[in-house]
Length: 337
Image (cartoon, rainbow, N blue to C red):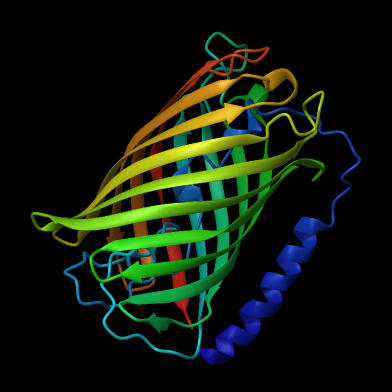
């Protein structure tokens, strides 16, 4: 596959240049309801590390190919000895079509709080820059990029396409007792999908503490994270009023039913804002969901999901509450070089 790598790397560079070459001074034509949650509140829209399973010593359900953290990248394997040199390159494509009861995340009663179909396409790529023994722990650094396109259909009033560029860098330290620490930097950039005008930037450092343990024949993962978002939005009186601290917790269970991989999860986020119209605003977001995957091969996977998310907000000038149910499916194609 090394020859294939020569083709994909230039393609990735071209996509990155295209995403960055936008007229940042142009006005966005349409507005999403709270860009701080679109699309990043969906944990499955981000990629951290390898989408392909790496064999470890723990009894882990096979990692398939959805754009979610790979098993080994969440601390699910217990390192004994890892390679000290070399790196891995990952590339993936995914597409999803699903129903959403509130795709633009509008407050209850808002004119645009209505259902629509969503078509999501994602290109994600990343490098693991080796793995290194640190006594009783193992350390791996990662770099990566994601390009995502959101399109709505079924209601002309909700025709708000969105392009998102994501860049990330983090280090993962895994311990033999099932604990892991992930710390890094993430940058997101949103563009109006019609004119490709840049409408939102989000840069945030963060650190996450993870713990894995057996739950019968399943593997359970609990993580706790803290991050600070530095933002720039075209939709606010002050460009940085979406700046915020975020505390999050998530519980995921990974198990199998035949060849199917089931991943129910629950997630909460507490957000604290201090600037502009969001002065003294505090949000409490909750999400529960079920992801199912069926691997046709090591590289090609079908996936289905049901997610429900809600946010309660207080303070600030406007209401930022929302409720949203998403359900649908798609396919993913991933490769490791």
